[in-house]
Length: 173
Image (cartoon, rainbow, N blue to C red; front, side, top):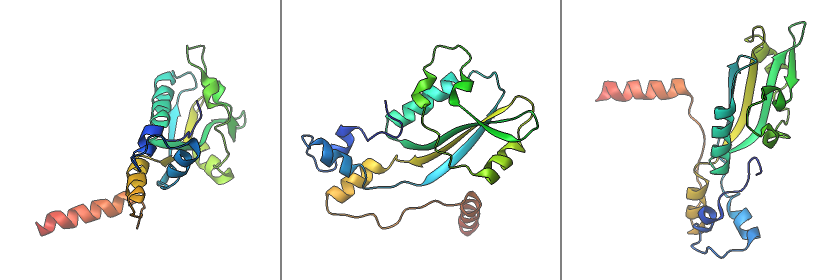
């Protein structure tokens, strides 16, 4: 299993209706679309059982819906400063292969990010920080491009802008 692995060959092959494409062509079609990059930081007690959450994260990766760019576990040292911890620190003897996440740390969170996270931690709490690319529309993009189309725009909308637009729309109707 590879974090951020390729799209399912059947999905990427659907872009050209040629399921017999060679592996190189399948890899190229999955690179057609770059989704939005986002992050989430979760705080858990140091002894929390996070197996279910990490399994669900793997399901999203295996489905090609997301690609993990960084996964970090952040805690506090004895003086209260942020410290990166190995993912294995989440292993409390449960039946889960935490090694699947080895190497997922790419240190995209800089010192300021770590300090901001640490400011929210207390005691033995740990933060699980995930930077990911949303790949949920990659198969759609592959299909569009495979049929002569192209991606015109892609991006995110800030929640406050979305709320404002919805309020404006409701007022008009």
